[in-house]
Length: 284
Ligand SMILES: Cc1cc2nc3c(=O)[nH]c(=O)nc-3n(C[C@H](O)[C@H](O)[C@H](O)COP(=O)(O)OP(=O)(O)OC[C@H]3O[C@@H](n4cnc5c(N)ncnc54)[C@H](O)[C@@H]3O)c2cc1C
Image (cartoon, protein in one colour):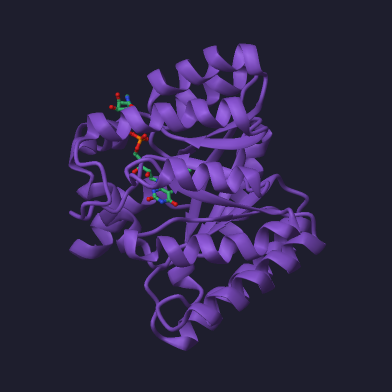
């Protein structure tokens, strides 16, 4: 086994279902049997090659058919730079709308991932054009100082939010610098969602944050789904399901595993978590 294959097996194998849509479908069937839904993502980002963009779009169209055919409980999560944003805004928008419309015809929900700060305006603008279809939500990052305003505006437009801390650590003035500030803002935004939105997703492995959400939601009784990456805290996901909370695991597939795994590895404060998760059983 060469070094690349060895690393792929060690790191990517933990977090990634396999190379093909079928691998993500099979993984979903298994997780569904444990009461867990999935967010399926076809790996790849920053595509400036039109052939790769077309391949990603047709993979998602096929995936939508497969999810419906197999009657599994799965959302799709896709990245703007995977479906054309690096080439043009209009290309990305038309691909996004095409995927959302096809998914709507099959009763499937599309989550729009949020990437680096310079893509945020275009991602939110495209999302606003798609809200009317009713089957799409957007990821919002608590490390961005603007996110409170974005959430207020999107809730007014009946947008659906998936709240994360943010994985693209770029040094700009638009982001909170310390992890403490990012977590503090996450708490504020989470409370805002619990008080003013009905249906949203909290994507975090932070059990203190999840405990707080559960406590606050005893009063508001909103429809919260907790989401985590597959292979990080699988036992905790199962624990939440056993306590009757909705849980979804992010299940990526494809061969383009380097960007995804690299982001997991550069989150240095997660090194302890990552190393622990590699050696802990992730059996569900
Ligand atoms: C479903 C999903 C979708 C995402 N989508 C996006 C996206 O579109 N855009 C984007 O920028 N980012 C996205 N992210 C990544 C996200 O922004 C964060 O980088 C990532 O989730 C880490 O933040 P956190 O809140 O989970 O953890 P942190 O606050 O960094 O850490 C959480 C705390 O949880 C505890 N913990 C975590 N794991 C373990 C463990 N294995 N064992 C024990 N304790 C543990 C530790 O105490 C740790 O301090 C997504 C994440 C998820 C889960």
